[in-house]
Image 1 (cartoon, rainbow, N blue to C red):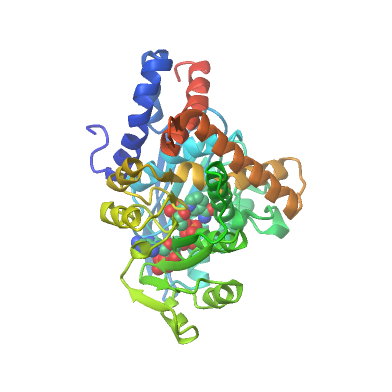
Image 2: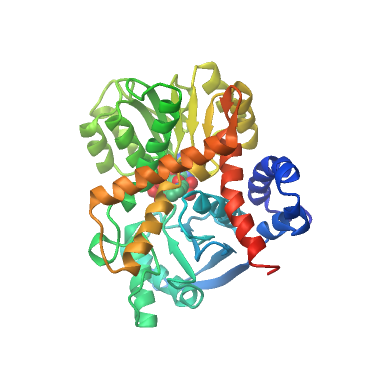
Amino acid sequence: EKRNPNEPEFLQAVKEVTEDLFPYITNNHPEFFDQKILERLTEPERIISFRVTWLDDNHQVQVNRGYRVQMNSSIGPYKGGLRFAPSVNQSILKFLAFEQVFKNSLTGLPIGGGKGGSDFDPKGKSDNEIMRFCQSFMTELYRHIGADTDVPAGDIGVGGREIGFLFGQFKRLQNNFTGVLTGKGELWGGSYIRPEATGYGLLYFVDCIFKHKGQSLKGKVATVSGAGNVAFYAVEKAMQLGAKVITVSNSLGTLYDPDGFDKEKMAFGATLGRNLDQYPAHYPNAQFLPAQKPWQFKCDIALPCATQNELDESDAKTLVANGCICVAEGANMPSTAEAIKVFLDAKISFAPGKAANAGGVAVSGLEMSQNSIRTQWCTEEVDNRLKTIMESIHETCLKYGKESDFVNYLKGANIGGFIKVANAMKAQGVV
Ligand code: NDP
């Protein structure tokens, strides 16, 4: 805490992991304490912070701060998304980069952990402003990344459009067409299924949880938060697997449809953008609840897919009291520490983001492989690989997290993600 003042999100993420790792290391690998593996894991290998200056449409100069946190490269090049949002700061990016190290290790692919972004707010900006910002951002970032060094991707506020502008500027500066970013368009080096991967992967993981319980998703009621990339594809796959999804949300409020969404309703919802409040005009049984969260509704499964710390202790208590038996995180650290305690005490299945939302980075890893061998696998091939990876993460969680009458997925993911990285660090010496 002394070394990382004013970084509450980073300290929260580290505390959550070390609570499981301390007893495990003490009992199984005391040599990791001598090697100072935990101290090394919690200190980024490198943090780059830089000025991003750009001209808005009124020819006014704008200044933002850009970052890249290169957290750990012991099992592969740094890999993790870029986030553009006004809330971005060093604490948030360090927590995301730290989580990414464990998540990437769990995928079984050779990728290290990193994260980056800017306090730039893309909301309300024109396409040209977004392009100028991305070009300026990349004009500094290009020195620090590369297909074998650090491979950024998208996150909140960074989708296909932004990746396109960033990639175009990188290629122009380096005269080099390489897989330096993932989430590229399908026509120019991107992988099929990458946009869908996090949401689909989340549901493949939830499916494994229910199969392990001897149940299926058919007829289960699910609440989802968020209405972005992760939430949208999570809803789609949940419906395909037979669940009834009754909410989505954004930072303005929650859309509740007691009849459940279907394909047509989702297609209509997608045309509304952030104006979810217009949905009830077409589907009168539905309600838009300004400034409310989705966790008040009775459900079997809750899927927080919006942002960090969006589900607190009182939300968790409501979910448990209403009979929810599974919470799986599509977002990164959406549940507060107090909420997680409620889930673990109630012994419901709690799947942390580092395991449950790893499908996105897994397909990003597959995009890197396809770029390296200059090929493009078909949709079915990528989807099958994604499914296999999520099943294998579930197995890892069982291996390290199974207790007598309950699977502690958080403990399983923390230890399962740690062990490979720790052994690699030990093997590579004191660096
Ligand atoms: P998007 O930008 O596509 O969507 C984010 C959604 O969350 C928007 O609907 C946004 O609403 C909503 N949201 C943001 N802040 C809040 C808030 N405070 N309260 C309620 N809703 C809010 O991002 P993604 O879907 O890509 O990412 C969502 C989460 O998933 C993040 O935590 C991200 O780190 C994580 N993640 C994403 C991956 C990916 O592949 N994209 C991979 C793994 C994790 P509004 O438009 O009103 O702001």
